Amino acid sequence: MKNGQTEQRKLFKEVLKRFQKAGILESVILIGSWCIPLYKKYFEELKTVSPMRTRDMDFLVPLDAKFENKVDIAALLKDLGFKTVFQGQHGYMRLVQPYLILEFLVAEKGRGTEKPYNLSALSVNAQRLRMLDMLTEETIQIEVDGIEIILPHPVLFALHKLTISSRRSGKNKIEKAEKDKKVAIEILNAFAKEKYLAPIKGLFNSLHKNRQKEIISILYKENEEMILNILKS
Image 1 (cartoon, rainbow, N blue to C red):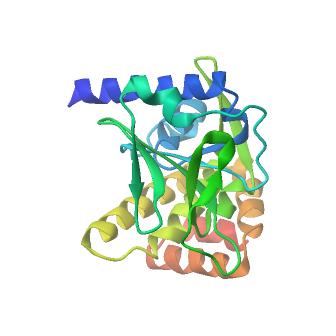
Image 2 (cartoon, rainbow, N blue to C red):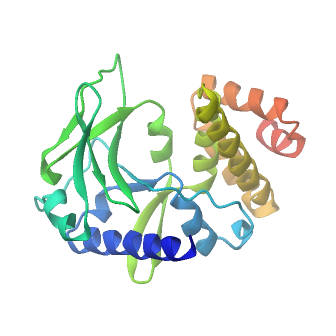
């Protein structure tokens, strides 16, 4: 298992290196569980947050993203063993390898559609999902081993995890929801320090009122009084 994790980390870094060289990383946001080890490197307060690493390596593409050069993602990663798989009735793309599953996502807006979003500049399509827009409210850029990566601000990452946890159903999804809540609460508690109080409150207030109510409701159920006092102050 340890060797598998080492190979997975090496592959993760190699994908990032290739994306940086191709000019992709400056226009996309890495989201999902792979943010956690990067946050832990960057923020001393998050060193003890539980790991959530999975095979999924997800990139959020803002709808206004611009790519200077056209890139064929599948061709770029083919020698690493990635194969293109089409999922669902409408065939959104995933690039699958024994250690990683690579997927591009865009924020769903308006009435919505199940059809994938065409990213012609990358020769892939993206799955549309609700609530991803909150991850773009504020981002951070970190540098790891010479690679510049854009991530959601960790507070927004945590608030998003809380929000989606309430929408998961089914045994496996409920287990995932509990992990989402656990990590989200760990992050928020870790940032419950004087220098972060204003940013936490500001980011929370930037969200739609309905999302704010949903987050407050979840935190009440979890008896997280310290976080509630910060958000409601």
